[in-house]
Amino acid sequence: MKKIALTISCALTLAGGGLYAQDNVQPLNIVTTSVPFLRISPDARAGAMGDLGVATNPDANSAFYNLAKTPFAKTPSAIAATYTPWLKDLGLNDVYLLAATGYYKLDELQALSGSIRYFSLGNITFTDFNGNILQDTRPREMGIDVGYSRKLSERLGLGIALRYIHSNLVGNYAGGQYKAGNAVAGDISVFYTAQNEAGQGWNLGAALSNLGTKIGYTSDDSQKDYIPANLSIGTSYTHAFDDQNKIMVGLDLHKLLVPTPPIATGDPAVDQAAINDYRNKSVLGSWFSSFGDAPGGFSEELKEFTASVGAEYSYDDLFFARAGYFYEDRNKGNRKFFSVGVGLKYNFVGLNFSYLVPSGSGISRNPLSNTLRLGVVFDLGMQE
Image (cartoon, rainbow, N blue to C red; front, side, top):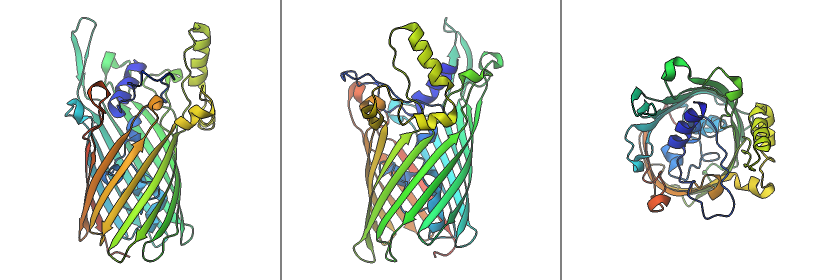
């Protein structure tokens, strides 16, 4: 049952088309985790730039990428919400991600923030081997965050966050034998800006996210799974052509701090020992071992990095045009896509839209094609 729960979550959350690299001589060896919805970009602005967000200029959604940016925001407080229909290209109409976030500056140096992500996996019907319906259930997952961020200097900021994760994938299936999973995790992030008063210059950022406990769906502690602990580093550069026209380009790199699954050898004793070692690693130990445990050595470790490249053009901070590209190695999930989007701002209200450009065809068509994100931002108070 644990495998069923994990399969439901992974299949519906990160179905990026990575299982069609069959012509590659290297075996598929995808690093998987529970609650992968935490890896979905919950913001239309970042979604339009290939999920770029670690070192972009701060906004209401900074908590999802780098909380340390928040004290550098121009307004004293803001709230935002985003709706993302998920896997619409597969004909699923009841799978979606809702996200809401906000911050409040206590003063010029520090800020409090909060956010929530709710992921609905639609309606699933469980049947027995004869096709008899056992029950209908609506799997759902959510993460609730609280955070604190502070300027350490005029250019350097630090952020910390605490997250509660709830994953209910099977309801009371099998008479309550299986349960919802719960976990607690934390984030720590840093942000440095070298931009001048005109908004031109470099930003640098780094974040460690989802550093927390394993999660399980039974009372058996040996059957718990890793959550998506992650290291992100990023940079962006903004060029101001004049007072009204600016362009920003950026790059983010991500690495899951999760052990790489062992590759089957065909020897049951050897394979079972490898699986036991994989599952029994401590959480803390898994973070460090994730940089050197790939069966293919250093070259495979490099393939476990994903990259986001994006750009944003802004006119008078009222109109924004965005584009980006996300890359993941074909043997590690094969999520590759272009995205585009626009943003409009009037007074204190901002609207953001992003669109994932279709790619592939037939069995190689990216199931994330045509993904659309819709976001709204309310900047509260006078701009600083």
